[in-house]
Image (tube, rainbow, N blue to C red; front, side, top):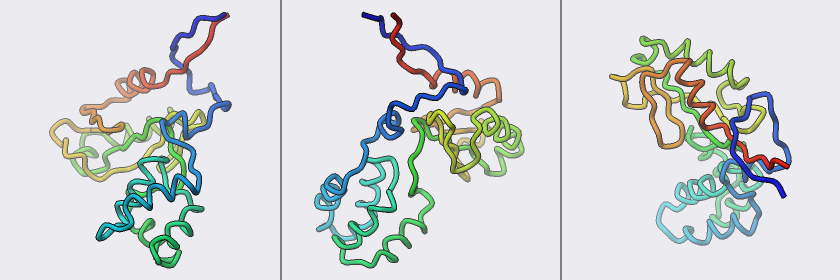
Length: 185
């Protein structure tokens, strides 16, 4: 029997045996699970946004195939549901990586080098905005202010804001966040 251990993984490695949703800490969606989220909130006033948030929080995104389920339960057209999802930039209709990186694109961060940082991050991960790295570890998203202007340039990963970010600091952070469990025999 082997000994499990966590080791940093290079960006060239690709683990495909585990569902991207599960690797990112989300469940794979089913119609029954979507209905659970809808049923828990549908009777509240203004329930559509809380339902969409609940679905995205549970599955990591709002799958296109859930739109008819949501529309029927909420007595809306699919176009109305899709319109709400597409109007709010927060909602995603595609799976995300284990870590979502928000790169600040506001003026203060740009004046302190965020464009160069952005270029480095995209190059390092092989992913542009709204894309996920091949190893499903990172999704890159733009954000237009993190409220951390005095410590520009800034990024957010999950709920953590990282200020005075440089390409070297990002590489160390990415290496720390990119780990897999391997079994040694």
